[in-house]
Image (cartoon, rainbow, N blue to C red; front, side):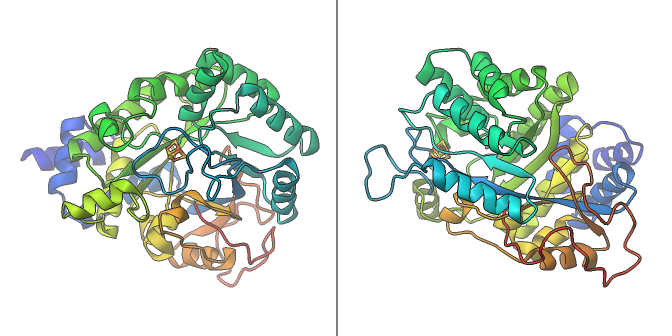
Length: 387
Ligand code: SF4
């Protein structure tokens, strides 16, 4: 057997790939082979043939940010009166009530690194939300936000996490990971949390009993080797803690941000759907200790997201009422919840609503899709969504 065939045999046997083997597979394997391997792993982990999604809302308390990531079209500098905003409580409460009214079970809260908002402001916000909606899951504050709060409030990241957990933070989104290689981070977001710090904060959250997700934004300046190094860091941390619920990857969106303009001037081309599918399949093959992979329909559109269900993905992501960050970069793929369920069925799966712990909470239960015309949803069927 040649080295590529040896790697393929290892995957079939359920053995772990080395980073070198994953790089080779990424560079040399046909897309159809990657699909076969990734789909087989997905089938072994999820034999019930269900594809899940969650109804939630992406709530961004502020877009004011001092971190100036080159790829970000969402933020405003402090003092930018034309663009900067900070939501007041009434607006936040109205958005949450709207989410709850349509069956939403989670608020995904992330935002800019505001120079004047310390940990106390967020403790009050999370505490007030929890006192009004005690059953709502607060998936809040990514590792770079935790690091920023530790700077503003002059306490450790562990202390920030402890305070926010006490106030009502249930789990942490794995945003801001981009590519966990500092050469790449220096080029695309030099002021943002470094790789070791992102991993350290995530591990601290896991040790406090909070689950988190892991993300990857690729297709900018990184090499294939660096993508695999990113996956390798996540896999090693998952070995230590088991704290990741899911992995979510998406491609860099070049609209309205300095990195996009710079790369376009250098002749760079935006990642294709094929590149997204290849990378997602490699993630499923390499991340043998992750149960769940989430599609990115906001960046890929519902057709490519549906294709990813045959490349190892088992979750369609968030049926969101609002998405501001990726759509600011000129990319917004919103479809009705009913259309999302149709896409999942057309790919050969049964759609079911889940919670943040990936437990099925759908009133239709776990019954497989014996009825293709099944339309009884636990929520109204016209909720727009995005990742
Ligand atoms: S990605 Fe986040 S941290 Fe970076 S500039 Fe945008 S809002 Fe700020």
